[in-house]
Every structure is written in C-alpha cells, then in structure tokens.
Length: 210
Image 1 (cartoon, rainbow, N blue to C red):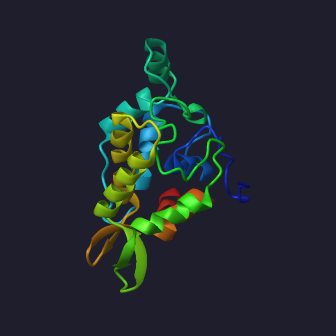
Image 2: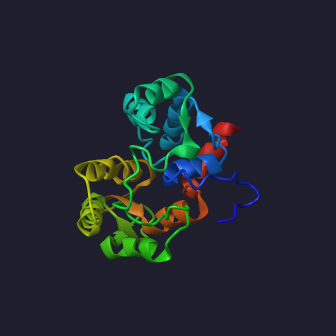
C-alpha cells in the first residue's frame, strides 16, 4: 500500500499492525530498534489511549527480546542491538496463517478478512452518545476462537499469541462505551489500511511532541 507524504515506508516483513503504525508514523525506524527505545515508544502511545492505559514494560521487553528468534545468538543480538522490526515475519511471534488473515505475507490488506471483523462486532454507544460498530472483550474472544477453528494446523501457542495482541489493542485503542470498553471497527480498519492511530491518540502524540 502506498504511503502518504507524512508516513514512513514499512517493510512487509513486519506483520504487526500496531508496530507497522509506529514505523509509519516515524516513532521507531523500520530497522533494528533497541529494546528500551521500542518499549518507550509503545508505552508512550499507550498512554494516549482513553484512561491513559499502562502496559507492563517488563513483559514488552521480554516479548521484544524473543521476537527475532529464540536461539542463543539471536537472543544475545537482540539484547545487545535490538529488535529487527523488518524481520519479524517467520519468527517466534508469527502465527503463520492462524491469525485474523487481514494482512497477507506481503503485508497487503485482505478486504474480505477485514470486513469479517464486523461479523463479531455489535452496536456500541460511545461517550458522545453515538452508535458505532465495536468489538468488546467477549467479541474478541469469539473472533480469536474462530481464527483457531479455521486454521489448518493451529498450535496452542497461536491462541496465546492472540491473547497478547487483540486484548492489548483493546486496552490501548479501546473506547469507554456505555456497556464497557470496546474497539471501534472503523479505527481498527484505519490501523490496518492507513497505518494511523485514532484521532484522539494522534492529537495527544502531537501535543507530546510539542
């Protein structure tokens, strides 16, 4: 997908929509990023979400350390140099077809799979009293379970990996609705299609930058 003039190019070998957006928005480079720098960027963005969510820094660093491989040399390299965000595909965190299927192996968005999110969504009322389609935690669980059920050869690890993705996205990008926190389907679509965070978060990031 072509980038906008203000966006940075992102490698197709980065399969994570959140990390792809960090790169596109210039918050981290599309290359090797020191684990501390990557952790700080993730925490910085998380704090711009509704309620200023706080993520566990130690857990983020642990996941980042293993992102490019679990071999001794790979772990040593990650610890010393950082995470290669442009070489995540095929690594320990890659679900290899057992995920949502929204991003292809070349990082192309599959419109049918993106639209599939609405099958699990329901109507939610946001803080302004407006109705929109959204995914709460129960809906995300149904979607993740369905992903595993349709996968050709799912691993137990794949479901665990999903638990570290969609629920965290709900925590960071979620809105507080009258019936609880939910992910806006439109905002998730923007994350995948346009590599941008919700406007309220983008505005807060801009204020942080001065």
